[in-house]
Image (cartoon, rainbow, N blue to C red; front, side, top):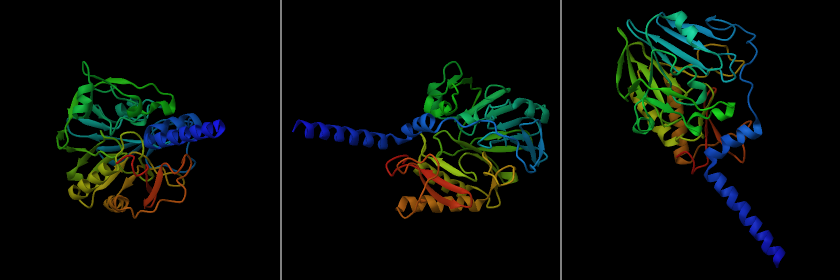
Length: 327
C-alpha cells in the first residue's frame, strides 16, 4: 500500500507540474529554449548571393526604397533584421533600432544630417539596440509604460525584453517622446500616422505613410513564423489589429517588415502586400472557429505541441500557444 501510495503521489505531482507548465507555457517555453536549445550564433557568414542595395561595411546593407526612405538590413544577423530610416524635410525617424549586434548609428549618420527620433516597433531585444543614441527616443504612449517610467527613464523587464535568450542584460533608456495611437508625426513635407498594433506584444507600434502607401509594421507580420506564443502575445489582439489595418490601409500599400525571409530567398528588404494581411485574417478567423489545422510538426524547438504552427500565405506562418494561452 505504501508503494502504491508513493507512486500515486509521484504521478499526481508530475501531472500537476505538467498542467502548471502548460498553463504558464508562454513563460516556460523561452526559459526552456535558452537552456536546452542553446544560444544562436548572432553573426553569420556573409551571404553568398547578391544583395539588394549596397553594403555599408561588412555587416549592414542599405537599400533605397525611395529617395527619402531607406531600409537598413542586417543580413549577417541570424534573424535577418531590417530597420527603416524615414526622412522628412526637417526631421527623420528611425523605425526600429537595430539588433545591437553592431552599432547602427554610423549608418544612419551617413544617410542624413537631420535630427533623428528613434522609435522601436516593440521592446524585444533584437529591436532596441540603439535606443538612447539619437537626438530623441519615442515609445508608444500607454498607461502601463508611462507608470513604469521614472525620471524619464524606462527599465525593460525580463519577459518584455527576452534578452536572456542571447545573454543580454535588460537595458534602461531615456524616453523623450510619447507617441499616441492615432497621432500624426510631422517630419516636414511628410507625415506618419502612429498605430498601436498589439498582437505580437501589447506595446507594438507601426507607422503608416498614407501619401506613399507605406506601412512600417515591425514584427506584426513578415515572411516567416509570426510569434504569438511568447509572453504578452495575444491571438485576439492579432485578429483585432489585422481587421483594423485591413479597414485603414490603401489596398496598394506596401508593408515593410522587420525580418527578411529565410534563405534561399534573396537578401532584400522584406515587403508584403495587402493580400498577406487578408490571408492572416483568414487564418486567425479559422483559429477562432476551431477549424484551422496546424502543421504536423511545428519545427525545431517545438515541445509537446507548443507552439502550434499554422500556414498563412507563402513563407508566412502563425505560431501560437495552446487554446488557453495567448488569448
